[in-house]
Image 1 (tube, helix red, strand yellow):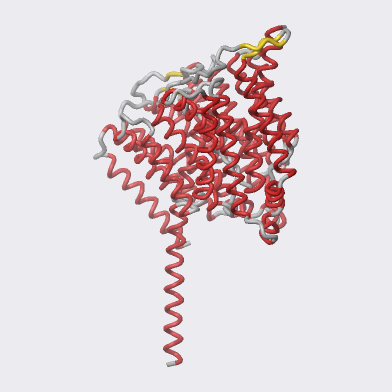
Image 2 (tube, chains in turn purple, yellow):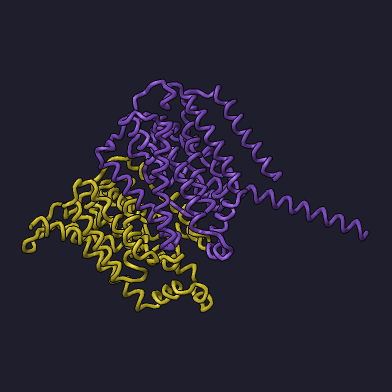
Length: 334
Length: 286
């Protein structure tokens, strides 16, 4: 409990720090910050099902596209504000996730098989977006720029920064609460050993269904945000590379942890952007550095930076405790 | 009717190449239990090496195989020792993450060295046509198909009838028992991995004159080899060949009949998804 209070305070500190730096960021820096936070948000939503429940899914771009496309279509055809439309997108993503989850449960898919099925679905999704004229084909759908907060459109970039910062902090709170809750404990139990969890009376279908639909729905909200921020939604939003980046950034931070999905993107996105800007005449060099760094982190630290740091701290504490009890014993005998 | 036959044979020819690269993936999986998401990217490297050979040294892609295959073999050996060997006992998740990052590294390197432009490689067979009754075929794919089948049969013979092959089978069956009976498991794994990459070093230059080269070409090849590997079944040569043909044919036929035509690219993935839903246990264990 005490640990949770400490974590809630840390979330507050993140939020305040975000607010504090927002004023001093340059125009390009705020764009990088928004994209980094957006990736952090997606990693956090993926982490619920990919990290806590251990259901390794590549379908997240499909959910993100559900959000971005649904809210944009509703805005264009029915003049529904994206603030409302984004929940329609989230609903669609949740239905898709529920179907996938049910299939996974019914067929008892091995982990690699599930990963490959979701990967195949993402590719089919991208091809569908490219070919559908209703969804704008290659060009996608445009959202006219305007300054109307009621329809989720701002000319001031800072507004998007505040929104995504708040969303990331809310996700931190949700993850902390989820890890401490019954459903979170059930998801972790399923990840560690599904058969044992079932034997202890965990309703596997219900727990994973809850986890996947929450994860998908929240991911879709991120899609609407990105469409509004860019004023366009095109098939690139659902690319396989997005799924790969979500997985890698979460892995570098620490899969299944509260702070890993935030730390990974916040460290990697600005680094990748700065490297590609520094080596602009050498396209690819920045990404090359970035990829090598990820491999090194994964091979050396295995479970990501946050998990590694937590382990080190625990080891220190244990060592200190052991040393303390030893010196006490020595004092008693001597 | 002519176009139909034409497309049919072209699909079958491409399917043979798919079967070969899936076979390379399958053999590595059987001895290391690692699914390499950078498999297709390694093949893309071999294709670009053929491009370098043809542009810088004036070598025909088919001649350059003599150089590229050994280079890829040694590169594969090193890659296994540096990256893959340290993940042998890691969970599947770590292997997926690291090989995805590796694919990222290879794609960026290709982008850095060759730019994002589409490129093509010319060979002596470019534009040559073989006439077989009602069908006329380009010579280059037919050669690629023939070499693929020969290599597949060769792999089968080596594994079944040589001492090294028996060691490979022993490691695939039970690596601990193999180690106890005196087999150098780490060496067998490294050699199998290196051979698989060497096979990509043969397949890459063979298809370089047929396909368009771009730095991201690897992802598609990786996924195609996963699909063929899983459809075909582990350690099942005939199955892998049949699966390769099915995917090659479905790609070719759907590009002919599918409307809108762009959706044809999705067909192999659809077949794959449906197959896995019907036979989920497939060949990958939990």
